[in-house]
Amino acid sequence: QVLLVESGGGLVQHGGSLNLSCTASPTFFALGSMGWFRRAPGKEREMVATITPGGMDNYVESVKGRFTISRPDYRKITLQMNSLKPEDTGLYYCNAQVWKFFNSTPSEYWGRGTQVTVSS
Image (tube, rainbow, N blue to C red; front, side):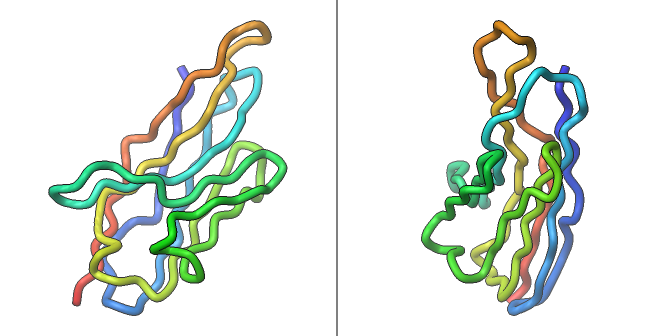
């Protein structure tokens, strides 16, 4: 089983910053893209940012210029969130595309989520 362990959520005021981190357990053959998704209260889960092993990133329009996703290690990603807004509040999930074995098809794995709350 591949585990994705998230950390770094919390409560912050409007305009503040948080840094999320996610590390995948070393129980796989290969990793593909990793990323962050969020589910706001009463809304469906949405992609926030993703990054490939080669460092190509992608963001949802609402966070461009404020959030930065990085992959400092093959198994680790971070999300630096600046200028946070109340609408950024939600449960943030780490996601990874995983090849468990050499000849397997890729599967998606999810972390348990870390709560981000931005007060107005």
